[in-house]
Length: 168
Image (cartoon, rainbow, N blue to C red; front, side, top):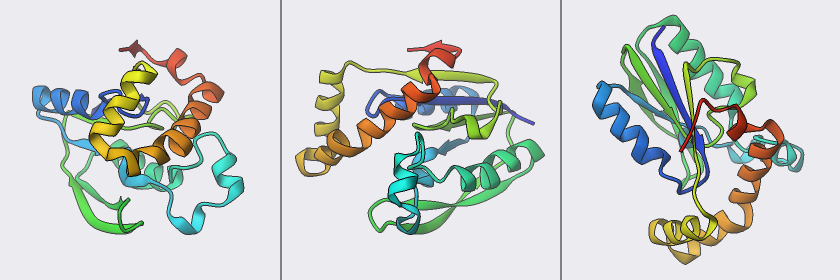
């Protein structure tokens, strides 16, 4: 089984940038939790009220964690947020180190799969500035109104920051 680094944290905190830096240093693949957003047919009020329920954690565990434990090459189908449907396949080659990046990557449903758990945080004003730069006002507002509150609920409920090995 590879050494797994899981980077969880707030939207626009720099999780992807850190993952890319680590991946370059270790010549490691990155698995993005954004590829496992919940499909529309699963977005029920009950599911979205569940802390961490807006990610398809069952599929992530089956298609990534279980495969990482097997120590083999594998692939998974990524969720495309623009089309709101499953899209192309992502190939993950066997590697001594694998980076898992994204909010919800420390979800307790996954068990203790990560060897190193990093939590990235960001000041709310800086977070909003980065979201506006990255997404623009029209796409940024849903982050502020919906996705950030859902993330914060997950962080608080499961004490994600407190259970990380490193907080940046």
